[in-house]
Length: 205
Image (tube, rainbow, N blue to C red; front, top):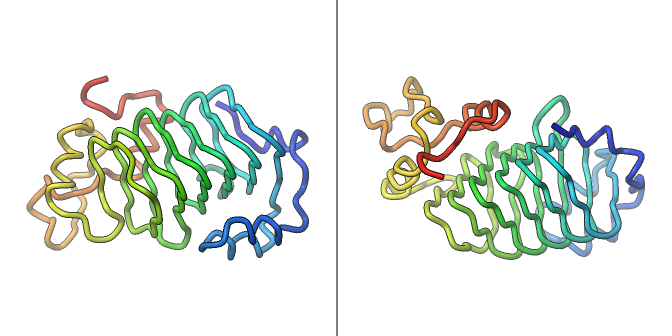
């Protein structure tokens, strides 16, 4: 697995983020205005394997990850992609902005409300899950989608039909969901654990 901080010498330090903030707008601009130690890559970037994003990075082009991308490991990662983002799976705790499309073969899972999930293009994936997370995106082709704050029961059931039962925490006690496991969301930590262990997320390939 690639930890992106080991590639820091391939990137430039981005000391002035004001131009990127103007180009993006939205909530991500607020994160760009703070000193998170941002790095910059000019042009398309290809990552050859599963990747732990543990730095704040702007990719001025497309970003292609041959595997999954996880932005919460030893340090919190933040990502701005000014082209398309292409991944197998994505789990995002931090701040994510994609100016083009976010294309995933499998699952896109955004979690935690202190950060943002913004995609100016479409999000085609098998399943898109937002959990207590602000989302601003265009819906692409999806087999199941769970809204960030008030998902319909039909959304939750559709995802459960597709995902393996091991991504659900049946002990979780959520008020109205308490006695109705079909109405629970997949658990972010269980999804992350399975990705890092190389275990499947879907009932069928």
